[in-house]
Length: 61
Image 1: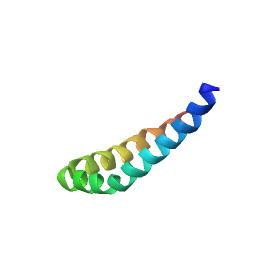
Image 2 (image 1 turned 180 degrees about the vertical axis):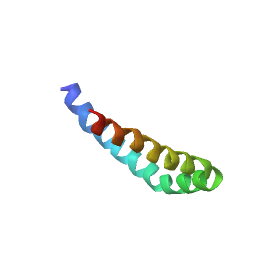
Image 3 (image 1 turned 120 degrees about the vertical axis):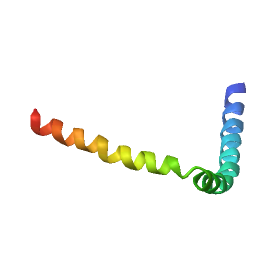
C-alpha cells in the first residue's frame, strides 16, 4: 500500500519539477548560447567529420 501511495506522489513531483525547469530551460539555454558560442561550432564541425568516416565504411565492407 505504501508503494502505491508513493508512486502517484513521485509521479506528480517530477511532473511539476519538469514544468518549472522547462520554463527556465530557454532562458538558461539562450544565456549559455550567447555566453558560449564555441560549443555550437564544435558539434557542427564534428557532425560532418563523423559522417565522412561512416560513409566510407559501408562501401569498404
